[in-house]
Amino acid sequence: MEIRMPLGDWIAAFFDWVEETMSGFFEALRQLFIWMFDAVDWIFATPPWWAVIVAVVIFALLARGWRFAVSTALGLLFIVSVDQWENAVDSLALVIVAAFLAVVISIPLGIWAARNSTVSKILKPIMDFLQTLPAFVYLVPALALFRIGVAPGIIATLIFAMAPGVRLTELGIRSVDKEVVEAGEAFGATPGRILRQIQIPLAMPSIMAGINQIIMLSLSMVVIAGLVGAGGLGGDVAQAISALNVGLGFEAGLSVVVLAIILDRFTASFGQGMGLYASFASARKARREAAEQAKFDAEAAAQTEADQLIAAGARRAPR
Image (cartoon, rainbow, N blue to C red):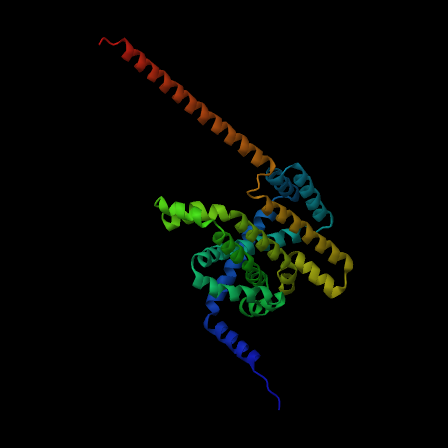
């Protein structure tokens, strides 16, 4: 006797129902994703490649210093030299859109979970499910609802990448010292103000680590997204696999590695006090503190002189 649960039939029927009843919504969402992708892609694809490289190198210099700037220039020139620049720009646009949407969704969810234990208990198994489900499985419902193209690649990447953002945001907020929060409450701060001015700033290293992981997971999904027509470097990798083209596969794969290293170093540098921008900011802060100290010293000296004059006048006064 064969026992088989018709789970696949149930899921197929569910997606057929969703597609029939909410086709307009998913088509609008598809067009939104395509519009966002085209907008970001236009920003990077319209200028000549050398202008984009110069701009990125300047940002790298400000973010981490001259070593990172030189490494970034060499990495981007490598991408140009293997004729993968347009594909790299397409992949970068997909990563930026998907990572932006993942951050917009995951950080508020992480904050909500940190402030509400019931929400945390609900989200934990969902995040476990999203992180353990094979990446290729995300493509099946994405293809069913958004058809072949960039949109299913974005939605699959978004779902695949958002879990670390939720987890690390919740961890960062919960790790804030309770005594600091209680001190804010003692001074009459509202919960919203405590969140904005105490918890989020102190949890920022953990939140930034979550954003870094979102970007890295988004980039790791680029190759898989190429299988559903998302194009970019993933499209070339998929083509190399189907044609057994080792050379093309290595060119596209190494270009993905270069983008991953650059994006990882950029996001890791936020808030670390590195690069020329941090030096300029530190010098500006030092000058401002010196000016405030000089002003305070001048006011204190003037007050001391005034007190001395008052005391001298009191001694000369007739009794």
